[in-house]
Image (cartoon, rainbow, N blue to C red; front, side, top):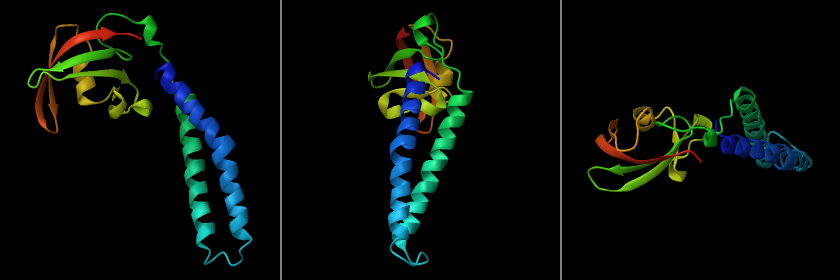
Length: 151
């Protein structure tokens, strides 16, 4: 996991514990005051939200306890975990930039590519100027590596 990914998860955990958890507890208490719990939709919705919040807290705590934080700025050379890679699609000449990150922090819309994705696996070990063939759900894609940065 990158330092930024670790910090984002840590921040989410703090928000869940300090904001979400107390809000859910308050909502449950207010819903209980309305009487009969068997037909109290507010109570059931609050309990469901509490279950989600507690589950997410446990999930993040587990991820953070097992995480190995890697600082990409101390890396160099061929593409590996943490690299920020600029590619050009050899068919459409469209440029894309991705950072290769762990599963927990992956977000393709934000340019954070899961290390286990087919594209990331194909990129590992490549250098600038190399071509990469990737089998995607949409068919075969060819990319050329334009640049590799470790930021």
